[in-house]
Amino acid sequence: MTVLRAPASSGAAREAAQESVRNAALRAEAIAGLTAREKSLAPKWLYDERGSALFERITGLPEYYPTRTETAILRRHAAQLGSLVPPGGALVELGSGASVKTRILLDAGAHFGAYVPIDISPEFLTRTAEDLRRRYRDLPIIPLTGDFSRPLNLPGAALDLPKIGFFPGSTIGNLDPAAARALLERVRGWPGTEGFILGVDLVKDPEELVAAYDDAQGVTAAFISNILVRLNREAGANFDPDAFAYEALWNADLARIDMRLVSTRKQVVYLSGTRIDFAADEPIHVSASRKYTGDSLAALATASGWRVAQSFADEGNRFLVACLVPGRPSSGTES
Image 1 (cartoon, rainbow, N blue to C red):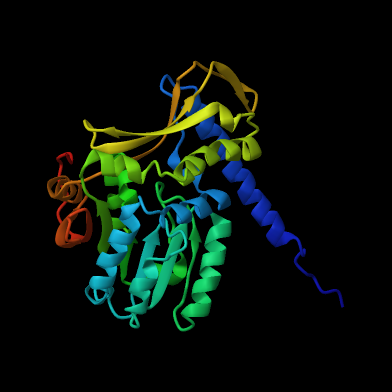
Image 2: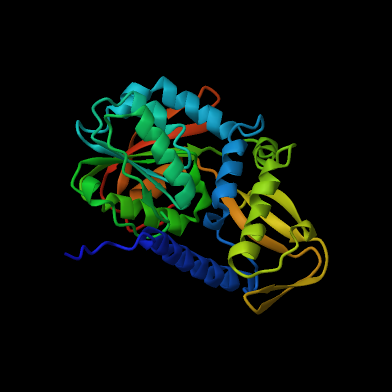
């Protein structure tokens, strides 16, 4: 009798196909951004395996207050935040990374029915999920590789569970107002969504803000510059990363930190055959981190169909963890 077996390489072939799709998207988006009048690259492409590891290093830097400040808030209010997840419900995290802060909630959530970490880096996500399964043996860990800036199909195992979204780290600040509103609207539309825990960095002294995004050790500069290395490796580019300098600037008009790579000389770069001309001192905008006030956060929540039901801040009022619940959408625009 002949026994039909799936090819041993089917998993590898699937991964290769997914990588090919990602690389094609990277090339297309990079060419569009770098041939625009004001050059830019999407920050989501910062998070390859090396980029994700560099970001985890950033979170431990002395200048980078957001992680330790938010972590202290989560620890102080872990029981209250964990109780927002209904018994048997799922905690769904956007941009999970190493899920370090999430473990605070998982430790307080013996009643959780599942944890769904979502991250754009498949290698990093796989390692994180394996580590979490060893630590939380009775909790289903259901990882999803995906780009949270686009619509996502939640895994079937979590789809029908009541759920609470979790978006720490003030990553909402990396999105422009329209994209932030669209993301909150999508989460609001997930079946069974009962709330959203959102970490938000607050407006403060510009010197403190700039230092947090331009550390003395140069880790943030390496993190941002790594996108050029990734373009060389995955998108057929020939960037010289040493020909670009990193800078972080406070944009008071937009209440955000802008992170840019600035060409140190006149140069030409090719990306998959597309010629890209740089003038000396011409910047590539790579990422932004918008800072909120209580009023601007409330406006964003209302505009996207939520309301701020409760919030927790540190003693210095530098960072806020907000608990959103479904509300009535507004036709207005957030401030």
